Amino acid sequence: MAYDAGLLNDYGGGNVEWWQDYIRTELDRSHDYYAAELANLRATNMELVAQVADANARETRLREATNQCRLAFAGMVSVQSAINKLDSLGDPT
Image 1 (cartoon, helix red, strand yellow):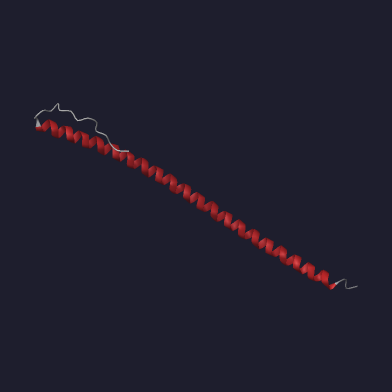
Image 2 (cartoon, rainbow, N blue to C red):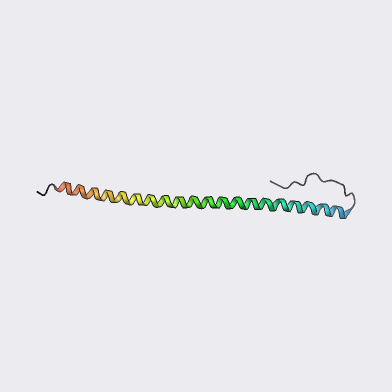
């Protein structure tokens, strides 16, 4: 988006002071416009940064849960392996 001053008028004729005031007014209005746009962009940026931070936190929690599942599965495999070894030895009686 860009500031649009609209059509320039010629109400000032050859009056230099009028033209200077007119230009200053348009500059002030354009400054206000772009200041508001910048504030909106900063707010949007902060929202996006917060969303990325939340997504990173969720990803970290998911990785931790996945690692815990892997460790638990590895433990179950080890236990099953030990059971199989005991079974292969046969009945000691």
